Amino acid sequence: MFNTDTIANKFRLSYLLFTILLCATFIAIFEVAEDKIEALLVQSYLLQQLQLTTEVAEASLQSTPVTPGLGVSIYPLSSAPQALKAQATSDIQKKSVVTKKGQEADLYFFNYHYEGHDYLLSYLDTGATPQQLPARYGDSDQYPVLALFEELEAIFLRALVGVILLSILMAFIFSYLSSKAIIKPLLDLKDAVEADQHNFDELTDLPSEVGILARAIDDKNNKLEQYLKREQLFTGDVSHELRTPLTIIMGASEVLQAQLSDHPKALEFTQRINTTAKETSEIISALLLLSRAPEKLDAPKICINHIAQSEVTRLSYLLQYKRVTCRIEAAEDYHTFVRPELLKMALGNLIKNAFQYTDSGEVVIVIDEQSISVSDTGLGIPDHMMPLLYKRFERIEPKELKVEGSGLGLSIVQRIMSHLGWRLTHSSNKAGGSTFTIHYGQAR
Image (tube, rainbow, N blue to C red; front, side, top):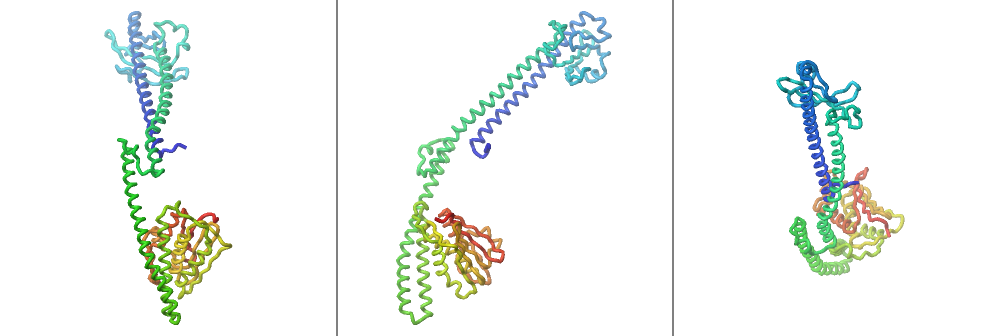
């Protein structure tokens, strides 16, 4: 199917339309010129017949009409048919009539003053060709010149049709070749962008619009490259600076846990410190992985069930004072190739949200060979929040629940999905709550 969205096809279509419009203009000019010439030929033929007739039968012509030639009628104006007399002027006119044989024909007529007398001259054109005329009209003085003109007109018309078809064909060929030449620099620019070339020396030197576009893209690439370098350096520096204090915090919390075994209240806080430090360390590792190109990441084979179970265990403290149960449904152990830090971060955010926003009921995690879904019986997501579901710093703030958070969780999950080439979907449960599903494809 012809696609008019591409620049090449738009150019070809516009060129063909221009050619067709030009040909239509030529046809219109031909039609107008043909009518004018035909009228002039008829007029000159009628005047010739009038002159010849008045020389031969001047006396009888003053009272009765004469038909000196095929289709020619010369009337004294006083005895002319009323229908023609009422319409006739000094300019030759043409109208369609039906003959006695039921054929359609063109009738030409006009008034003419000749040697002191007024006449109405008419010519009935039946469109007869020389081969169709009776033999008695074969003499040149009686043969209507219009028949010969119409034969020439048919020849010119066939030639015009041939020229038009040839013009359209040439326009199609020329537009195809010229559009390829016009689009080639754009295709070269596309290939250069797709090949991640950092300079477009051959294209940026072009004085055309393609050169302007190439220079703009090259400038934007340089800015983006600098921005990415700064982001990578920042991420690397932050991770390096944070790992040391996090390691100290985890070590100190472990020492405190060993020394406060007889103080359960204090022990709970030290465990929380140790858990938070470990989570922060894992988050830093995941963010570092997100800053790298996906194709540069190694993806070991991991068990999805184990990741889900470890995240449920890690976040179980959120359900400590709630009437909420959690279960994992899986027919077997499912595996996929992915960095564990990224899967833990994505799945952990979904489980954490389900735990935080569910005050009673249950949270169900279903794993199969195509997807991982986290379903809860919590508050659900209001309709007005749906367009902002994956926006950064957008979060639900229910009055009846105190929920800590920055509104980055779903945004980070969506970013991880894009990074891995996976997909995240959301649906509302009929009984209340939400279901988020990670589509990771066929398990391997």
